[in-house]
Length: 238
Image (cartoon, rainbow, N blue to C red):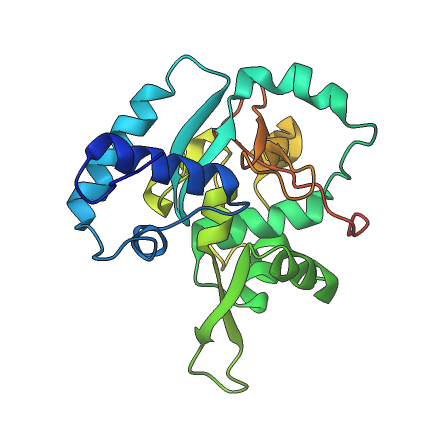
């Protein structure tokens, strides 16, 4: 096969398709440009990617754009069958972990003290460590007060695991319950009463390095769209 991706749009889509299917992680436009000499313009790549996405419509795999780039992934409706291939279910995160993640996602940047003010209880350091190890949060600065506590925010990896491209795509707070301001101490009554924190888990189950990206199970109802729980080796943190 004599491919000419720089001259033939169909050949360009074939190369992009192969790269995206082979990659265990999303690929950005910068990543994709590295395959070509000379590198095509970003607009040319976007047109090719849009055409590739349309070509996969109606199939068991779809091409999506997330915060970390572009990836192929199985469609949500495939999950009931694909889940039968795995003998073990991923551990579920504790309420404390999900509460902390929700607060950071919607109130960022926040310090550990802010989180404790909202939850009304101290934050176990292992909770922050768990979220950092999953790549969902990171320290993005320090508050200019005595002690200079770290300010935490979510990462692009967090958005990608949710199938989102930006924080603007997070659902309105009223869909999860209202997070109170840091000066208040009672945590989100709606979340405690209705257990809607399960929405903060979509269930993204990864079977190791899956070349088709994340296998997504959508919760019903799913206020977070695809709210997640990642299969991890670590045990549940309380």
